[in-house]
Image 1 (cartoon, rainbow, N blue to C red):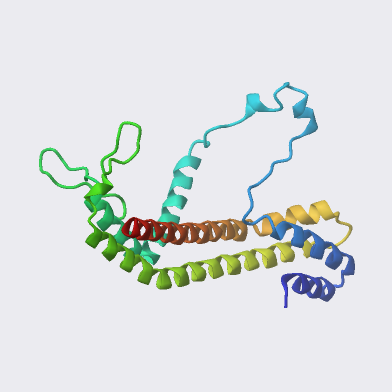
Image 2 (image 1 turned 135 degrees about the vertical axis):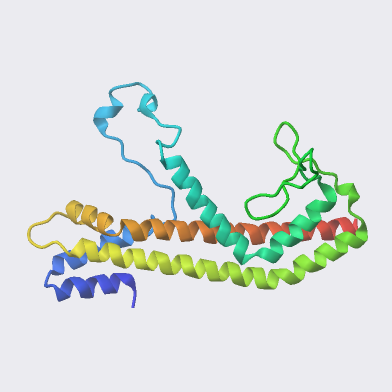
Length: 238
């Protein structure tokens, strides 16, 4: 049964047919927002304060405390990807080990590693990595191509599983939103129901956004590996 049908049954159960119709429409519209960029409505009065329509008040940085919290969430998402695809990152770091130079402590010679235990690679002042792909011999290219090609079978399945998790999280958010929407009784406007539904489902909504981001990251990783495999193949046949 779809979420919309669940909403109708829930509203009818509490004896509010009008709420059922409203919830079906509103929840259906809001369900499409879970993995879309958010658009903010600007109060018309604010647009009259400046010719640049709010630019003077636009924030370009996180509020105090927000930046660290967001960085922690991003780190958690990256951790999920690294734990789900350890062999993919192993292949890439072995390849980079042939074409890049690691950052080492000048005193001890110890190679610096990142949060996930992989080497930190030297960069140009611009921030781009220092690389020399002429170091890759055909034998090494062939080895990496074979490992990437055979690994894609498992990596694509893992990405599909993470997509399923994101869809389940979105479904739970829709159900939570629907429950909050139809819960109020008496004379309540659609706007008031919508706001109560949003508040009721806020935690589930953020979880759905988080899982959607993880899924997209997994898909991007698999696509990148496919392209790298294709470039290796092209260089072998050139």
